[in-house]
Amino acid sequence: MRRIIWRVAVLTVATITAFTLSPVPWSNASTPATPPNSTSLFSVSRILKLDTYGSDPSIVATGNDSMFVIGTFDRSKGAVDDLIRINLKTWRIAAAARFPNETSVAFGDGALWWATGQNAFDIPAPDNGRVLFKIDPTNLHRESTYVLPNRTLLVTVVGSSLWVATPTMLIRIDPGSGRVLVNVVVGFTPTDMSPSGHGKYFDVLGSSGSKQFVTTYDATSGRRIAQRQLPGATGGPLATTVRGVWVATDNLNNKTAAARYYEGERLVPSVIRGGYPFDTSLYPGVGVIWLVDSGGQGSTDCFDMSSGHVRARGGPLGVWGSVATYVGRTYVLFERDLTDYFLRVTPSKSCS
Image (cartoon, rainbow, N blue to C red; front, side, top):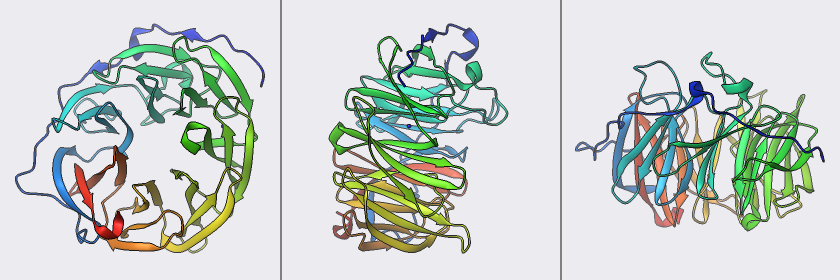
């Protein structure tokens, strides 16, 4: 995730403008739907029913007392990706919008950033996937549309720096104008990107052929700080901590995964915990890392973010379950019987 300065075009084509959806059905679920065997991990304090199961639903950003979730929650008009804003104070879906395609979403600098990147469901991406949308985080209306030099695979906000990953480079962009400020050529294809080091750095997962890497960059200049080759395939997500980054790698031979911890800005290999289900995903929490089987079959764990010691183990969250933390509170996306639920949970003593 160059020193070439690109001119960024502002696109005004009506066909890629987002339009507002009717509010996604919500409820406080009179019959609570909670993850099975989860009491060792957390207790559920609030439940929001979203809609029938869609495409890879996930929590993609937090901010402004809101949680932002993507997924195909309304399939009546075809299989496309939807973005919803959940107001954490009112516990309602406050806004919903539809955009043509999605590969990555981030919040920062007072806006949501939506990278289009590549085709999904055979729906063409705007301008061959080179578009980055700037979205109002309150009403989810599109504020600006920037067309970049190549496909916008990933986006993240690190402190005050907005970074976009393309298949060949990392680009730092002025959030007000879309002007390219910094270009960094990389020798791999970025697959995940996350801020780290209290906004000083950002970590990038990437692949080149059969090789996989995790690399740390300076958030202002884009200077490469360190890089480590990973002993297995991975697609992320990265789970960053104040001291390092966790990443799950898959063993293609025995179909298992391992959680690996790389410590410090030099990414020193520190902890390995293996034997987890294939498709394991890791999410940072308050003092712990949450381990979720994205296939919806394996257990959900919380473990110490420094030592990797498993503190508690509970039931699965369903397909594509995910965990997010905002201002010290923990939120879970949970699937049961093809319906998605958004939960606010209180971690157990073991997981806090």
